[in-house]
Length: 619
Ligand SMILES: [Zn+2]
Ligand SMILES: [Zn+2]
Image (cartoon, rainbow, N blue to C red; front, side):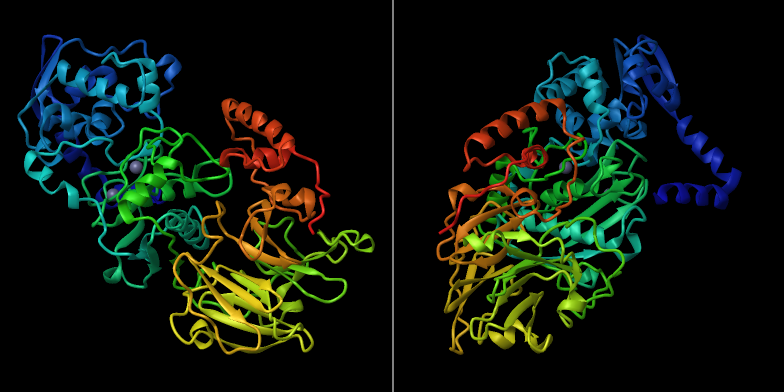
C-alpha cells in the first residue's frame, strides 16, 4: 500500500505548481464529434463518451446504468485513447488488445495514430471481448459485459495485433531456450502487505507448481544482472507503458520471454490464507505463467484465465495450463533453488541451527508436514517434523498388532531444538540410517545432518556433494527406506539409492523416481513396514515403497481423521454455491469409493465434511 504515501509525497513536493499542468493535459484540444456535437477538449470527450469514458472499476453496477448513456455515434483519433483512464471501458479495450486488433495497428502505433475510432470499431472490439468470454455477443455495453470488465484481473493483453512482419518470427517468440532460469526479488521494491518470507515462500511454491510439469530449474540469484526473471511491487505510472490504476482493476502484469519482469500493483492489498484482500499466491502463480511464455486462457478454471474471482483454498494448475507449460518448456520435472536453501526464514543464511521457537506458544495446528520417519524401536514411534516443531505418532492399538500411526497428543508438539538439537527447522526430508538404527539423516537445501538418538547430537554434517561421489542432487525432496537394506532419495524426476554397508551413494538415472508422476506436491515420506506415507497439505496416501503403487483404501485420506494430527484448515467459506454443490456430490462419491480422487477445489471441503476414519489393515 505504498501508493498512498507516494501520492502524498508528490503533492507535498510540487504543491499547487502541479495543478495547471494536469489541467492543461485534461483540457488539451482534441478534434472529435459525439452524437453530432463537436468536442474540443479531452475532458469534454471523456464526459461525452459517457459509460465508455469513465472509471467503471469502482462503480456499483446495480444502479450505474441509468443516467449516463453510451453515445450512438462518435469519431475521434486513435491517439486520444491514451488519455482515457485504464479503468474506463475504452482504456481497458485498448490495454487488453481489443482495440489494436480492431484498428489493425500495433499498440506502439496507436498512441501516435490518426486512425479513426468510431462506433463500429468499438462494437467490433466489444464483440471480440464478448465472444472470448462467452457472453452474449451484441457489441453493446451490456450489464454482464460491464460486470466482467469491472472484475479485478491481470493487465497482460488477451489479444494482440501482429503485423505480417512480426509474424515471420512467431515460432521463436515467447520461449526460453534454456532449462535453468534465474530469478531475483528487487529488495527496494517489496511490499508492506506481507512479510518477505511469505512473498518468497509463495513465489517459490508457485515456481514449483510450474516446475512439476516442465524440465526447468529455477535458481534465485543475489543480483539483478544475473537474473532472467525479476519481481517487484510498483506504484501507478512506474516506467513501462502500462501504469497501474490504484486499488482494483489491474492487479499485476508480467512480460513474456525473453523479457522477464513481473510487476505487482502495490496499491492492492495482497494477502495470504484469507479471503480478505487479493490472494498473493494466486496472482504470482498466474503472472509467472506469462514469464514462462503462456498467454491468457479462455478456460475459466485455468490458472491463465485473466480474471480474479476471489480466494481459492487449493490452487492447482488446470490441464490447459499443463499443456501450455509443456509446450513452452518441454515435459519434465524441475526444482526451485532459493538462495537460503529454502529454509523460508528469508535471512539468506541457509540451513543452520534451529531458530528459537517460543516454548510457551506451540502452534495451534500444523501448516504442513515437512518430513517424517519411523524410529524402529519398540513401540515403533513415527516422528513428524513441521516448521520448528515435531510431533510423535504411536502405533494405534499396538496390543492387537495394528501398527497404523496415531498422534500421541499427550506428548504434544515439541521443539526440534529440544528433541533434535542441531537440526534446522523447516526440513526437506528425514530418513533413518539403515546402517545404525539409532541414527537418522536429515536434509535441508544442499546440506545433510546425521543425528544420533543415543547422544542426542549431530555426529556428522556436510553437503550433499560430500555424500555423492558425482552428480549429487541439488536438494532432497523426499527420503525413505526402500527395504531393510536400501534407502531412496528423491529429487525432481530422479531417485538416488544407497545400499547398506556400502560406500556407494548411487548416481540416479532420469525418470527413476517412480513417485514423480504422483499427483501431489510437497511429498514427505515416512517408512512404515513395507508402506510409505505421502503427505500433502491436509491429506495423505499410502504407497508401496518399492514401486510407488498406491494402496486403494488409502488414497487421499484426511490426516486429521486417520492420524489425529491437528492440521490447519484454510476454510471453505470462500467457495461459490456452484462449487459447493459440486463438492457435495464429490463427497458422496468419496464416501462410496475409497479410491476416489476428489478434484483440487473440493479437497478442503471434503476434509472438513468427512468424519470417518479408516481401520483397514496394511499387511
Ligand atoms: Zn495474465
Ligand atoms: Zn509494470
